[in-house]
Length: 91
Image (cartoon, rainbow, N blue to C red):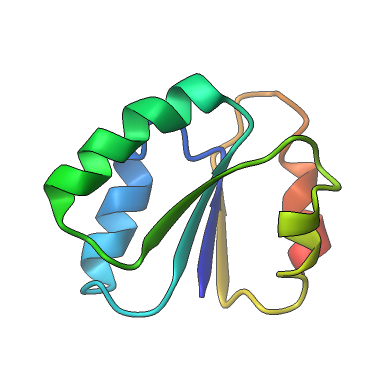
C-alpha cells in the first residue's frame, strides 16, 4: 500500500499508479476538494484501478488513523500547509 499526501491534481500519484501496474492500493489524500475534483477526470483517463482519491478534513482524520502502520511507502510533496505531519502518523 502506498499513500500520497498532498496529491493535488494527481501527477505524481498517477505516475506511481502506473509504476505499480494498477496493482496494490494507492491512496491519494488532499485537503482541497477542488484539487481532488481536478484529479478525478485525470484518474478516469488513466484507466488505473488501484488509485483511491480521498479528501482529508485535518491531520487527525480517521482516514489517516486507520492506515497507521500499514503503508509500505508514503509520498509527501507538501506545499507548506502543515499536512506533512500526517505522514508521521503512518510510520
